[in-house]
Length: 325
Ligand SMILES: NC(=O)c1ccc[n+]([C@@H]2O[C@H](COP(=O)([O-])OP(=O)(O)OC[C@H]3O[C@@H](n4cnc5c(N)ncnc54)[C@H](O)[C@@H]3O)[C@@H](O)[C@H]2O)c1
Image 1 (cartoon, rainbow, N blue to C red):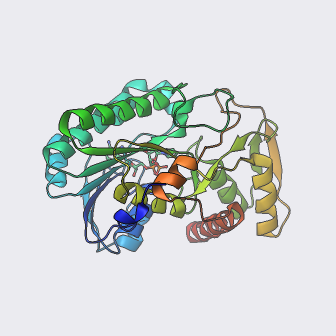
Image 2 (image 1 turned 180 degrees about the vertical axis):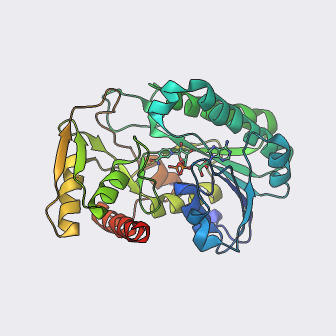
């Protein structure tokens, strides 16, 4: 076992840049870090919103800009110790329709962030990649040593981003860490896009008294990780001795979509109407992370049970729904 006590688990008094910090996951990371650190966000607000940064308002430096704007990026990097790179286009089907746009933001954007960070003497870049790099192979759980097998332009851009981390770390000596996230869920996740997270869609539907749409038989599985746990895991990826390491971040447990509906029905305290739809082409059948490396190297395990996380997510969806009605 490595000695985890050599570096503090908490980031304290550091200067941190979060790209994509106004997004769903980025804003939770900002909320966590801003308490003890000086945090700057660079976000073009293409899918993120200022509302997501409401809790951090007045405490965070916000640059509304794209990571593709090299001058702004270079300025934002000055004096930063750690960079979390989350800015990305994130929809698998949109990436099939618009592969060039995905290549530009996710590959050129990531290379730009890495180069700017190295030029500015940043200590470490944590790159948020995705379980999508594993593709559709039936092998379970997904272990970091498996050969990537991307099945969409989105997955390919994430895989290339991972390789860019390797390249720039080798050439410049900057520290890089790759985190492969599994299925994130929790408050603030946008339910409106056609392929947004299933939990966000279900909670929004319950809050609006609409039926839930289940594609296929509902027996497909996902490894759901609550967003506050992700923020904790990312903080650890920024502080622990994991330079050059690729880490899965998931719960290690597989839940079927039908189980999620059953739990939500119990939490909501009311029967839930369901509409069955045909299976969608391209949907991954099953997904589950091997979480042993994150446990061993970061001391990270998911703290929030799926029931507790679903309860918090449904509460948030109901609040949002009552605000908009
Ligand atoms: N949500 C998940 O389940 C999941 C799973 C695996 C990986 N990820 C990764 O986590 C990261 C965050 O995803 P999210 O779910 O919070 O999505 P999100 O869309 O809420 O966040 C992405 C953020 O990046 C910003 N952005 C996009 N293009 C930009 C650009 N060119 N310059 C600056 N900012 C830009 C958006 O405005 C948004 O705030 C992404 O890199 C995504 O690929 C998410």
